[in-house]
Picture 1: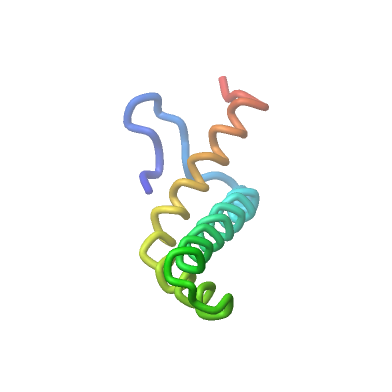
Picture 2: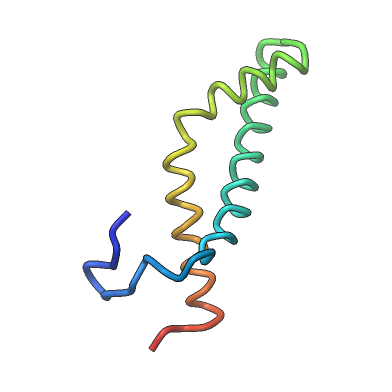
Length: 86
């Protein structure tokens, strides 16, 4: 991730603990994605619930890093919507 936005110069590197909220967003998005994968596998392949969630977690792994960046961006958007930086 860049240290600041090349277009508007918004500083991405904030104080320590700033992205704690992004962790909650990332956790929620990750959980939704794993459940979605597991439900698709469970319905399509009729795997057991345990195996569906296991495969859902395995299929989720390539999405972990992009989801982390997405969660950070969503957190910054939420922060700027609530308390805009001048």
